[in-house]
Amino acid sequence: MEGNCYNNETISFFYNRSGKNISKEWRTQDYVVVSLGLTVCIIVILANILVMVAIFTNRRFHFPIYYLLGNLAAADLFAGISYLYLMFHTGPWTMKLSTQEWFLRQNLIDTSLTASVANLLAIAVERHQTIFTMQLHSQMTNRRVILLISGIWATAIFMGMVPAMGWHCLCNLNSCSTMAPMYSKSYLVFWAVLNLLTFFIMMAVYTRIFVYVRHKSQRMSQHTSETRQKETVVNLMKTVSMILGCFVICWTPGLVLLMLDGMGCKSCQVLRFEKYCLVLAECNSLVNPIIYSFRDKEMLLTFKRILCCLCRRGNDRKNTLSGVHFNTLEQEVLSESNGDSHLDGRNDGSNDSSHHGNHSTRTARPR
Image (cartoon, rainbow, N blue to C red; front, side, top):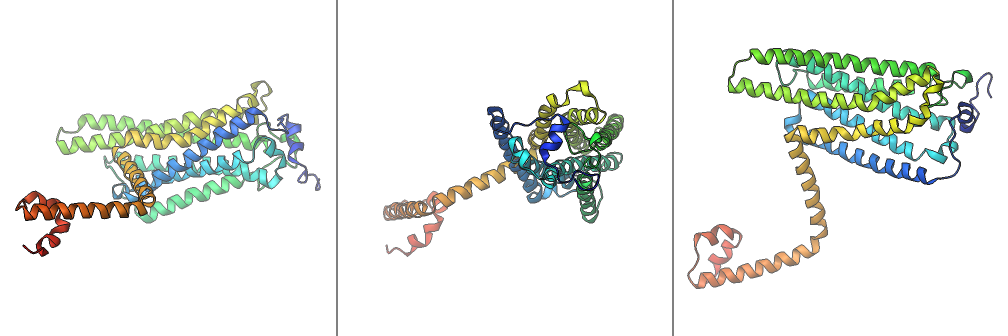
């Protein structure tokens, strides 16, 4: 204890005091939770890397809205890494953590959530600016997009570091929460209310956009170009709205639980539902790539091209030596068959087109 603070106490001290007991030995359920968690984390990381590579390689996605969607994938990727770190520092491993390591574990998750929320808010603003002019893409420059993305991550990192910077309960044990035994209850309430308020703002923005699009589409002429533009705008809006809807569904239960814990609700049994809310929040990072695949045909085709390219490279590496022998045998067989057909006077157009690589050999043979 330093002064009036408990900075040198162990993690067990805070957990035991809050009533959040963790087993000291590995149980079957601990193995199951960690195994499933690691599996989901790996899938989340690979899936969101695929989304980022698709947006980077396909020029049709080089627009502000897709840059922001790519940044959302980066936030989901960061969330996957954060949960991966959590899986290696949970269960009986929790008691071995130092105070700094525990704050790092929690700060990574807070940063990923803030990055996702801020990115969704930026997407809502971008869609609001473009849809009200019935444009597919905004006129935002790449420099502004980079500054916006940099601002999102700067805000996320700062918000993730707030508890470790002083908004904790190490100096006031009576203010410690139950779900996060080293976080202050007031911080949990602030965190939950801020994110829930942001959710309501985004939902209000999208509701206003949908009302406007519906009203505008009824007044548009039936020209093919305008109809296609309207359908493209509406489809993109539906995709973005599905992403927002899934995010709200996956994160709202956990945020409500945090708020109840921060308000000191002893009859709410927050620890009983904590793991379920955590799993639901983790699955959200896996949902977005699935939405892209089903809602955006161009994105799905890009995914297939990337995966096929990776498979071909893998096969080429495996068959490097054997491929040389097979190609050599094929060339010998083709040269013999071409030579026989030439001697028999059957050099038709199909041979010229299909064995163009052996044309110089055939012409060089003496008659």
